[in-house]
Image 1: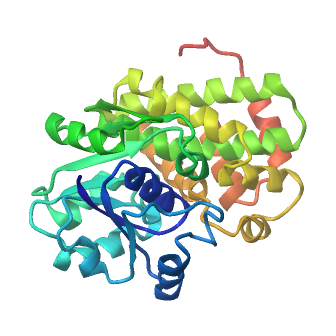
Image 2 (image 1 turned 60 degrees about the vertical axis):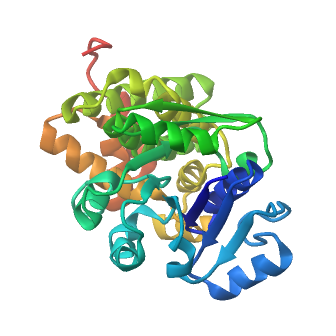
Image 3 (image 1 turned 90 degrees about the vertical axis):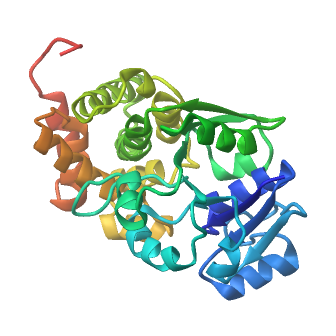
Length: 332
């Protein structure tokens, strides 16, 4: 049994708590809403984010951050990426020395394009083992115990296996890699491409278009990964192609649903209201395009989503622009 603190009680944090709790680990699930946490303790269910899913006996909802992490052996960070740096400032005073950290969120920092591992290193230093947990994982399916898999990225092979060990179970496989950069880029950029796929499907462009968009989007991810020091094979794995296919093709994806709403004529603001939760691909589009410009990398799909989101470009005009690009070698 491992003592684990999961920080973030939304759908994904709750899904992870159910997964790890079902493996026999002692899990404290922290969230900001004390009333919601009290209801979860009473009902043994997160009725807002994962209704109908029971919390295992080993999962303890906890509204006090210091108590949540007090004796933890692993601390899993599942707060939205745009609030992570400020949250780390709150977390630092109560974080046990040397405790292992696991990032299970996805995104890039607003204004800097920094990956989550970079933020953690800057705010908390390098004295904590750090891993990234990512892959094609919808929270409800994980919590339901349906078969699934994810990747644990960490430069420390021993800690990677510790994290994989708590996640690995009868219905869930956890693989390891040392390519933190590739896993984080894949997790952030696939959300942007899922928005684009939602737009294409909202216009009823068909399966051929969807497959082409996913494939060319993957090529864009690889090009940026090359520039930033990631390994190409990472993007062909669970945290790259696997997560991209999941979020680009299934309506459980908030980012895909956001793209569908844009194609229906909703404004960005109205589409966000309709989704009612964070759409991480929006900010990732801006920061992904910022990184592409900085590194001199051609990323036309990421650019198009950024222009639709932040420059008022019509989604249909964006599609027309992509289709009118000059022919080129596929592997260029």
